[in-house]
Length: 194
Image 1 (cartoon, rainbow, N blue to C red):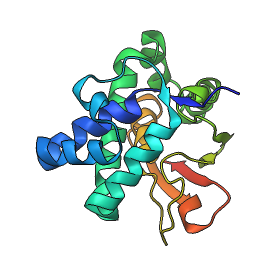
Image 2: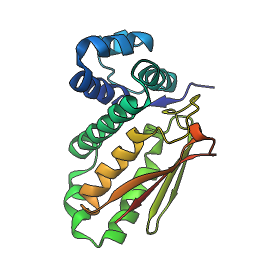
Image 3: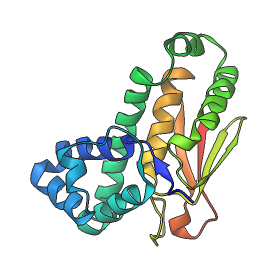
Image 4: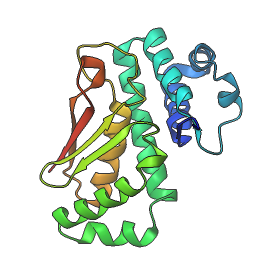
């Protein structure tokens, strides 16, 4: 069976956020600890093995601590949303969705995210429920795989989702991680509300 893969934003945007917050030296240390020095020198151009994303976030927490790793993950998520809006979300959707009622935009966006979940979920099972709030989950999330913490760790996914919803659904959207596998939950779950 082929190894699960995840889009390169999960590495590239972490590198960008880490360089900005901690500098190139610390970034090089984190990427070396994750055995990803090559990815730092030459950013990946295609899907990457899921194991690389797991190693990167594990190294972030180990070397910088959970609060800093979460902050880096959140900034990387914001950068990923910005990238997706500029390069992956079709321009007609970027123009149309904000003009629709929020409930309808949310349904259309959630449907699109579900269809493309293979690009970011890796081997995780993607869960989604339209409504108010919108609920999104990942059972087997790569960001926190193997971690044991009392609180949530998946700020990367939360901020990516929030960034997309704030632009395409409503500026008033908030994202809250309501459960995390690192804290013993069956899935990492997020609520997007407005």
